[in-house]
Amino acid sequence: MRFGLNLLLWCDTLEDSILPVLEEIKKIGYDVVEIPIFEYDVAKYALWGKRLNDLGLARTGVTIRLPGNNPISPDAAERCKGIDGNKAALDCAAAAGCEVLAGPYHSALGHFSGAGPTADEWRWGTDGMRQVAEHAEKVNITLGLEYLNRFECYLLNTAADGARFCRDVGHPRCKMMYDTFHSHIEEKNTPAAIRALKDCISHVHISENDRSTPGTGNIRWAENFDTLHEIGYNNLMVIEAFGLALDKIAAATKIWRRMYESERQLATDGLKFMKQEVAKRWK
Image: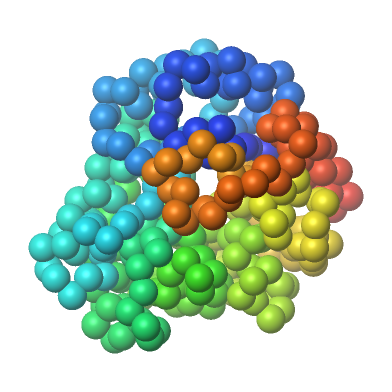
């Protein structure tokens, strides 16, 4: 297993001020960092790839789509903007040396129609994502699409939704990620949810029910770790917790009070928790 930490705990844009944090993350014992990709400057991400190489940190990326570039919009031009945005994010992720691009970039975050996805929206989503997956193949990145709770999107809300979406896209680069936070809200049966993703899981987010330090809240941790072990998952586990300085996605994260003692405390205790749980099961 490889253990990672999402930089959204500190920032939503890579700036030089994050360099001491990255050094600290490496010292704490992480293998991977998940970097925000909310701007599309390939040269900038190539530079950060070199810096992260020097630190010995592997990386994944995370991106989103918003109204205006919604891949399931009824407006064809807007759908094209969504597809192009996803391809641009992949180019930046490749420049940075990411192996997975995670996030809910299948549809616009925080946008709702007042109903579930229509047949047209589903078709637009899968057809567009097939194009994105073909581009991911060219740049050697695997997609880690994220299903979200019903308060954040309406296209993919459960693991079963995600598995069906991947099947309908029908491309080997189109995979799903599993996030313990969203699962805790939407799934009636945690093991069944994880099993639904057995053939298409590429990434895991470890996140407490209140976005605080993993292991301190109400997530059914034993069921999560037991079933991830059962399906043979043994790759990326990345803590996702959000800081207060996230201008680009503050409306989605809805974090306005500190959910932990300090970022270092969360990072240190969260890594210890993951390693303890993995050691109990993976030999």
